[in-house]
Length: 112
Image (cartoon, rainbow, N blue to C red; front, side, top):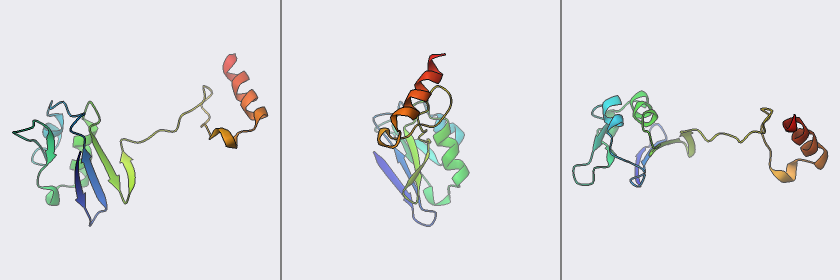
């Protein structure tokens, strides 16, 4: 996995070579920022210093396999990690933080 770090913005762009299928959508969305490596066929960052955040995100958003991830100051910002939800739209919580009565209420609401 290639890591590209921009310390002045706290941004780290990772491109997972195992997930990249070289369809080049990132290179179309952000030309001159993402390019396909001629030897490996995997997307890489080029001209990272001059790339804007908008360009970095544009390339990551169009990746069909989500091979491009972006972190800022150690926190993953793209793609977002969504919190699992119960069927009624309530955010879930770790099992040790839900008492049995609350779990029963949520389960009964899903059965209807």
